[in-house]
Image (spheres, rainbow, N blue to C red):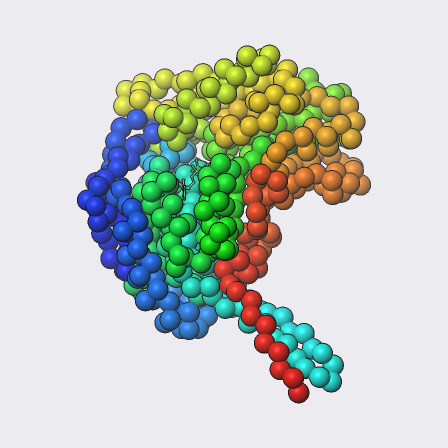
Length: 479
Ligand code: NAD
């Protein structure tokens, strides 16, 4: 099967005629190909987007609302087809695709379709003299580049606000998980999205992705991916004065105080550690436990991690499917070897799981819990982005904060305590863009989403995203 680019309302192969293999990570087989697009395809996409911009940016919010809702309706109708495609492409458990990825893609589009109807701008009065009002106008052609871990979920999280605000988009999904982006192209055609409003170019990051970031007509880029890629984007875009939103890597702490609700804390920590095989930017990978409950918590976490079912992604009873690629599993295993070298003890997991028959070539790994490592070691400092967590005890609130803040990242965090004052105190001082108290992954799409330090620049979500995808123009009238 050959995936196509979606340019100017039509499906095309890459102009070069080149193709890249697309793997099914659950069995290690090539099952489709994607266009190996380059600057020529991006150029065609930008031309289509530029041509579509005058009509799309002025058709009015009600029309954009109507078409975006139609796209969301079709996503809902095709939920099962999209979920199957997502799991086949990424290896994630089908239950995750059905209950998280695809419903959230639908919700993203509906949310921003509606948000644009309520999006206002400021007015500043200078009494007796003048009034200022601010227009928030679409930027023009914008780029959206997304990663493989939540493919359609993160792709739509960017595209929806860009389109709702009246921009035309050149977007690229990850080359590892292109399939639902391709299915979205077909949905957009069926929904009647005007040609050129959204263009989806498939291919490699350094080639097709780089061509998007470099293109002089693309005035803003919203990117989610690794911190090192984010650096390349920043270097490329800065001299061109492009607007950039960078959602990058994480090394998120879970801070667990002895007065927490033990059952809630441990069951949620299992999820926050291993959901989607730890391949969610919001997963907690460093678990800090107050000493009086350290051993009890550790033993329970290990017991439950061992009980997680690693298996066929298409079996509804599977907790963890395969990792996304051979290279990624090797990277995660490399970190487990490093953890041992650095003096850590792997309490459970970290072993390749061999499944029988057709699935024998898949990239399965059992979830790992590691203890005995200092905070400063590489295992505790670098993003692994797999089913691996480390545990460390702490004695005081101050020490917990120093440990939690002692990395270069600052995306998300969780705090577990029944002391509301302490929760508020720690939340105020923790270096992260997102703090969950006694919960994890409770998401309200209106809230600002993003990280500090090496986890990124800018915020997505709600009004933040609509502001990113618009330019503010102040108009002053003297009277
Ligand atoms: P990646 O940086 O390798 O790739 C992300 C996207 O960028 C892909 O589409 C890729 O093709 C493209 N790309 C690569 N090089 C490029 C270049 N030079 N120019 C333009 N585009 C380029 O990341 P990944 O491995 O796909 O995703 C995993 C990373 O994403 C992890 O670090 C994870 O923490 C991060 N992530 C962050 C968030 C967040 O919200 N902060 C969410 C999900 C994932």
